[in-house]
Length: 615
Image (cartoon, rainbow, N blue to C red; front, top):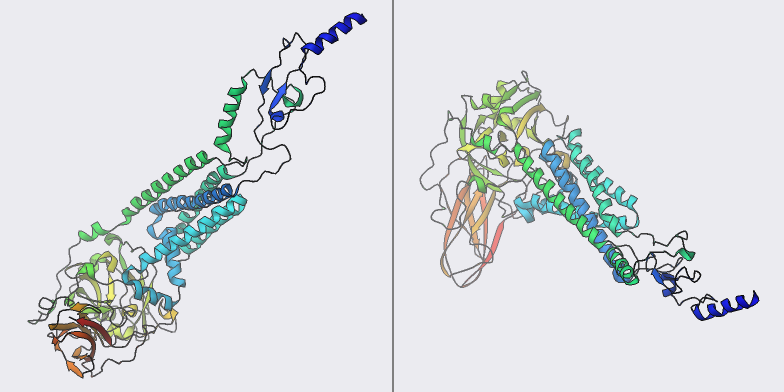
């Protein structure tokens, strides 16, 4: 027995691998991925076989492997992009829902309108001065930029805490809901687009962030049927290594940090597509509210009192290049209001309601207004109180409408009323002095301008205008209600913001040509422009050339006291730099003051002056 045993042991010493007896560890990292079969001879044919485990090629258990600086930057960049894309999806879905509810319920529009309401008057005046009629485009662009920056931050926060990211998206939705439901004409349903958009945006954020978050490193189970978790797969070692590396490179960065780039970009592509489709679909749906077609189908009634014929030579713009025409084309008429989205009022659904201090308050349909036999046609210049010295927030049209004073008396406006609170369909309120509405001869409830129904952006189907008063107290657009009340009882939108309650237009003049800082040839050069003082009319315009005394300019024939007048002063300019200053005097003898005053709170003052070079 002993001899036989010795023989076997001798044989094993010859056939066993050299590491079998003492189990010497193979140097790391090979030891962690290779396992040796040491079963008795005969089971494995005494041939040492190497197999690959399913363990990830990562650090040993317990090691804290950190990503490289470049990897961290990439993850933060993609996380910020994830927040931006989630916000785009949220806005797209919100626009889609707004296509069902109404354009004004869009979160961008609602937040923009809220921003207008909360903006200090000095900043509003600055925006109008700098951007004019493009102020709303700038405002919407600013809202989108703020949303984008906020979304980037939300994405970065979500990388550390998904909960905080969801809270950030939720806050975005809450702001939109509050802005929509608290606007003057808002309701609970107007908050639905912001709510649904935020919910979908939150889901999108979770899906976008998931491929960027760290995943636990896989460690082999000790119960795989072999010591140390070794597998008994017969897969060739090279094939296992290639398969595992393919999986690793697809899902982790080089330091073992989970980063599914392919998954992120696939999800991002889906998010972009969803944002484009829902946003575009929402815009298409919102077109169903458009009333341009219904407007074009309307035929203006013939007024019972047409505008007087223009005197010969009333418009000098044909003879003086760059001089403002006597009448402004509808497409060029200035527009200043707080409406980011233009109210769309169906003619068939329109009503004008008289309420408050009337003996016989009632409502009128558009057909009833069109069928009145007291419609008149008048030529009137309108001016915005935000017009700066030399500004162009003033335009002229031939209007058709109902005499406002007669209309109010017909329905028994009470003498104790000193304010007409006029409401737009979007909830804007304009406070108009009742006395002016009753006593200004050409004050109108207007339904047409320059031979066609009012443009949608200029108040279709009905607006008010009172010559001699700035628009913010006299020119309510999209007017749906006239409430006879008092200034003590209620403040209108602008007077609540400390603008003057009574705002007569100040005498004003402007140089149209030559343009400031322009080089013009020496020799005969006309200096020309327009002047206005609605309700009183212009009596005289004077021009100061360099340091010389004022010289009286030639005026166009007067049409009426409510229409501006053109003026021109022919000059023979010597080469060199020149400065021109203009001033006007109204028919009551009031001359423009030189004192420069900003528009707030009741209109700007000062003289328009330009410099140019004659060569």
